[in-house]
Image (tube, rainbow, N blue to C red):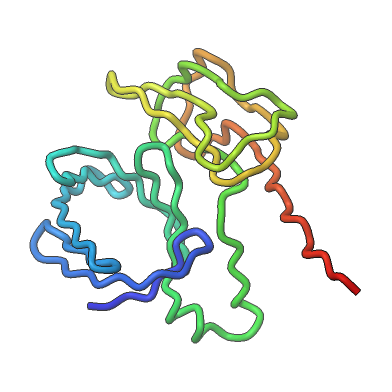
Length: 175
């Protein structure tokens, strides 16, 4: 089945086949096959090319939040978005916060309040089930608040770092 998705704020076309506990995705001629096992209502164990990853899934009817390896993805069906009544079409993609992907302990805080960070920059390291997971900045911006300290026990809904997204400079016109 073909899906027209918005992942964070980027629109992408994905072909997906789900059979038993295996999913095959095709995006731009790049096939990916993964098996999955449901652990709980909001946790899935993925096996992608022999690598096991925990995925945490949440969200409502319109937007699904998926956290894999400390990275947060907001996924929305672009087709249903186009059919939504007027006034509900505004989807603001991208996280404004960095949250724990699972119940964990904070090992290290690598960012400081007021610091400018780049998308993908490592901000926090947490540990759960004897595995460390790095949490990354979802976009370029400024750290406005650190809400945890080393040694804190945190849950998936806990906001560890607040980030104010960097505004793109307006295009200059030569008149």
